Length: 116
Image (cartoon, rainbow, N blue to C red; front, side, top):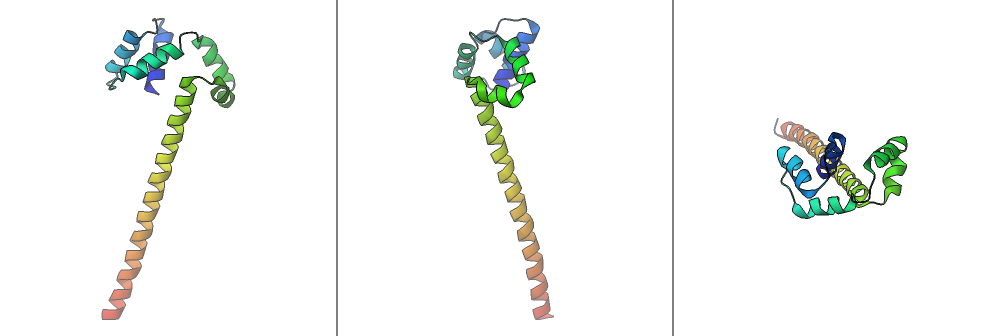
């Protein structure tokens, strides 16, 4: 996602969206840059009017991402899904830990009753 943000920053500031500029923005932000991802992004954005894409996405966010069909939209969707899955896994782990904690408390009371 940070790669797309870098391209948006460059677009907003009127800078050319090329490999060197995207790499520079990402490095300035402290991102460990993957050259292949930078090349893929530059290639994907080659014939894209970013202003038009942003306006279209702002008008219909869900339809824009689904209908866009670009590598960036797919990457953004995959990233969002992965984040959701991670959040679900974390929630499940927290719930399991809470349940285990409750079981231990209940089990501890039972042992106390047995041994007075």
